[in-house]
Length: 119
Image (cartoon, rainbow, N blue to C red; front, side, top):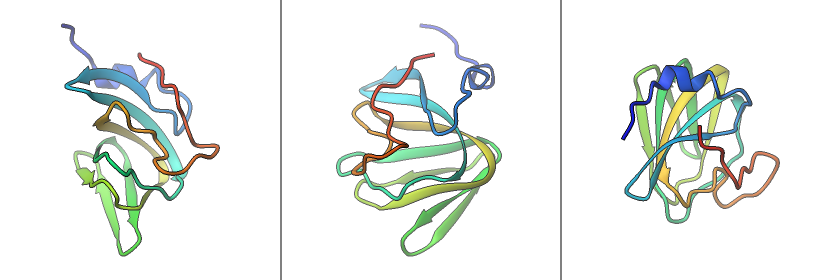
């Protein structure tokens, strides 16, 4: 058992769109990611995802609407829902998702990260 300072851990997240694992519980990963600009459209067949904004803001684009998230907000994207995070400026996000979750879901491209570093 150990304490984690999320803001200090974000200092170790340097590459955009490259999540880092900072904790594990009940088959779930707690991940930190920084990003700017649009991601890729994707969905997850079997996993829900929770996006919690630590610093900055972004828009979660869905096929039928956009949801703006700012510091302190979180959003759960249910499995099967196609989505695309998009940030005008750099945003810091904490993710909670099953350990089996591939960051690009049903899509593999330049954004795909199959092996994540633990920090």
